[in-house]
Amino acid sequence: MSSTVITNIATLITNDTSLGDGSPLGLIQDAAVVIDGDRVAWTGETSKAPATDNRVDAAGRAVLPGFVDSHSHLVFAGDRTAEFNARMSGRAYSAGGIRTTVAATRAASDEALEANLTRHLAEALRQGTTTMETKSGYGLTVADEARALRIAAAHTDEVTYLGAHVVPSDHAGDPDGYVGLVTGEMLTACAPHARWIDVFCEKGAFDGDQARAILTAGRAAGLGLRVHANQLTRGPGVRLAVELDAASADHCTHLGDADVAALAGSRTVATLLPGAEFSTRAEWPDARRLLDAGVTVALSTDCNPGSSFTSSVPFCVALAVRDMGMTPDEAVWSATAGGAAALRRTDIGRLVPGARADLILLDAPSHVHLAYRPGVPLVTAVWRGGVRVA
Image 1 (cartoon, one colour):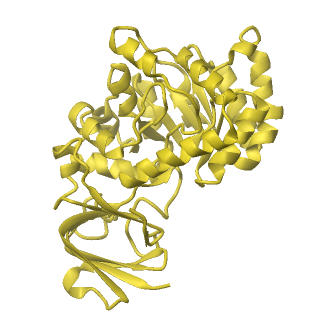
Image 2 (cartoon, rainbow, N blue to C red):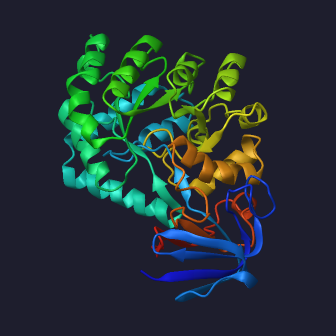
Image 3 (tube, one colour):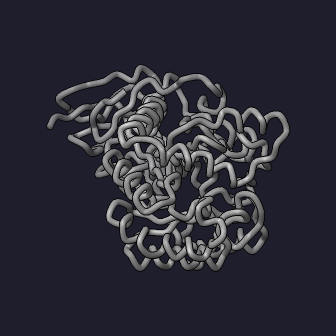
């Protein structure tokens, strides 16, 4: 293994309040960072950087931790262009469109699913995403859910079992029977390939009692908990996530005061997914309300073929600043350290000694440009585990 120092960094985001300016971003000006093997070994001012085997000149550009995308759905087949076109022409989004992708995914080969997954992972990596969670949920049979997770686990450590995405058409007359399958035979087949279990707790998907049964069964099988909560309507999802100490309640678009208070008093991260609101013309989550209440917030893409077909965290950062009441600092923290918190990880999402050397170099002097210059491909280099990969 060799060591590398990146010098002449205009602004370095460490996400450590004990460093730099003492803000949540831990900004260091005129900075350097040393990578030794797959870890960060040192951060500080360029003038104090130690000798290393290799040197990279950032030339007055910004460096920040790799984005941590803690919510995506990348094991799928098919295309929902027609649905998107119809929605942009006036048809409202509902959970039922998922079944279109289920049919296409069941019909696809393992090779086709893996090729699609790796294409989107590579697309995200080029845009600075160095950690990406992804879910099953488009198979909804024992065999199809297990193969989706097996394929995903070959390419990312953050894999989530989402057999409880919707009740499939072949179980439409017996939703409780499908819950029994999700918590029984399907869970047994899927748990070895996953770190997490998730449920879409929403009208048209699974109610609070069904969601509780699914999550508690997953926890008994050794899986961590995540919840699709309060996306389309107010409901029990957020408070159920908090009650069960889920790592993340995702979407959080329609919240009452009790929901916000519950999140603020818990370890559960509110993961906001602005790509979904952008793609469905739905009401934006009120990030300002959550942040002011002291809730830990993450930003993620929700990359999926139906309601948020973007793999770009920078795009979501710009949306969060423009339409959700976040400052650029808050949005970037939420897309890095916030995403790590939503995965209950301390080794990613920050650039401090001992952290994994996942970092990105922007073609800009400041992280603020991610919101200031929306749509511009500012990520010019990416290191993952200390290796330059883009």
